[in-house]
Length: 551
Image (tube, rainbow, N blue to C red; front, side, top):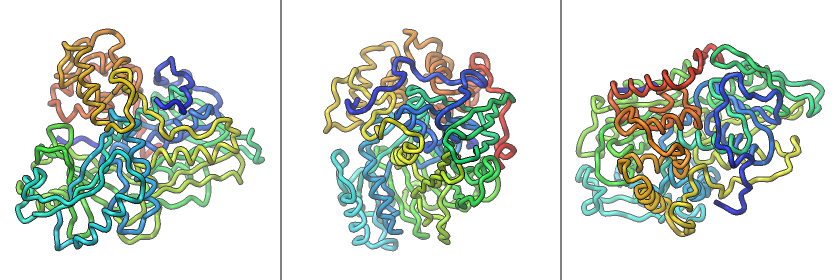
């Protein structure tokens, strides 16, 4: 089956007493705001969150669902990018490494430390080069929680058991794992709880810049909801964080000239039944000098990816092709005793990465760094976001907000460094956090506390809820009962919570982005979730076809 694709220094939320409530089409949409953010991927929600925390009024408009495309199609890693050292991307690697531990501490429910094994293949890179790269990786940024790299004897270590026997030596280093789609949603929740208006199924059909250069002139934008209704909003500044559509949106919908060119690169992943019985991931070197990651996924599965292929055609229609499936299977089979075959693939996904076009001939070598461009010469501020990667979203959001702070006269400064994501403060359940503790250890204590609180609920369900919702499980269980079991392990309380507080409108939103339940349920069980959504969630209206809206 394949599917289409609490820190005392942090200011309190502007609306801390009221959890995020999705804005339905046409309702509670302000007529004016300080900033209109276009795009509900990781960069858009990260910027909206930071700006809202500085006391600015923010409207975020996402044409489809949050994280529906690129931001839910990553390799699920919080990492510096070991392979970028080979392309001399030291600045990018350093700032990404510096972000890792702060992110891991602030979101222990959706992130966890990850040890990654690199089997040494003498026909690829020599051992001295790997050691040198890992030494740099260990020391480019300060580490407090994550252990450094070391060598491993694969003949004796459990991580070598699944590999072909001629792989006898390897290296192990640290990075982090993240549920990417949930990271996006929680940033949106945080933004909403700090006063932002988050709109999904809402396209910015047009944006017109006021003339004269005065800040009061602003932007006038037409929002087009999925049910056909339109709404006009005036904004003092516009942020273009449309990801792969940033170039198209700017040229065709904001009528701006001299638009920067993006390099659109498709990355695809496959999921198979689990290939090994430990919690480490692997990084495999391929003969084409690329790498793939292989990691434990959703308990019963293994995730393999990614590819890097120039993407042509409709951005929203990116799908894995047969050559990509074969490539990932062949490269994984070079290392594993048990061959991986295309027939083993139970799910796949693809995303289009909007990379800055640096004229590199190799898609894998195109920089993953970002560029922020603030244009105030034409009148009201316009901030364009080009490129970027998941790990640096917070830093990007902070830099973007810093750039807009002066023209918008924001009274509050940067605040997100060290901030805890919604649900990430587990201290009420496990006691005050110990700075030296690992987030995964805190999560185990949290699960034990949940089992004491709700002993009648299955341990597996509570474990999943802990990893997805963290301390927000209090809100999920606010009614005092989990309610009816709609499908195995899926209770009505969770579905109601996702619809009321996380902008979930359809079964796909729930099964493939807010959770990965789609992997664990069969067709009939998924159909029951879909039927529940149709009965209990107000339909978002007709979908706006992406290519008609923005291409």
